[in-house]
Length: 304
Image 1 (spheres, one colour):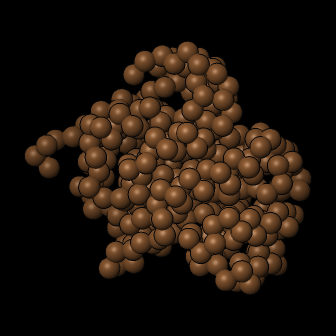
Image 2 (cartoon, rainbow, N blue to C red; image 1 turned 90 degrees about the horizontal axis):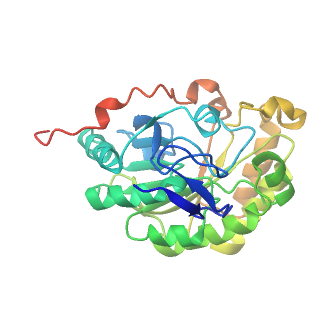
């Protein structure tokens, strides 16, 4: 890995200098991946986690600054350990050995160079899932074509004023529309295996924020307009005020059943295929433990 003098891999295009371990850009990260957790993850959508779990690799840092991020410890506070592309490839091997259904790269977009290098070292034999905020550069996504089988983007906002206020992204809606269009182009329609585990396709997550059901409904309308029935939609009721959400009284609470039902009912009216959550998922106990106790994954014994 080399120092990058002008980084433009994400839509911020801040042109920042990134050394191996530090960066002056929006994400504040170097080019060497920083990882906070590696292991089977059972709390994704049923067609992703299945019975054996999704092989999740949680990367530190982010291209957004969501004030309510449930992974605030790693996205904003940058908890994690640095690993090489070779060690990242070993993570794939070790997760495969555990029998997970897929390799789940969580918030990896600012480490795209290292991710691409890792795939050249070892190409997973199971589907690769790219788990993202939706704030992605189309140019960067095109570089992932042929390596990623499943895209799992958020579509956080229709109203860019909310995107700027809560996530520091003034142009989020337009960027997400274009990015997800590219994801759908690459993956096509959803494909499952004989056990109902997704093998290819795009699943869009819509997180319902308190006091902002109108925006969530507008997001659903946008998804229907641009992608039709080519995607699955996951309407999420898991919002829990974490991070800096306490500074924003209007979102400093969980959503109500009435708020959630309003958004779910609209998805039903639009005849969308996908998933809804129980509101019991809105608990901090469902936030992964980012204790960096994943070092066993970073090496690989070929006799496994």
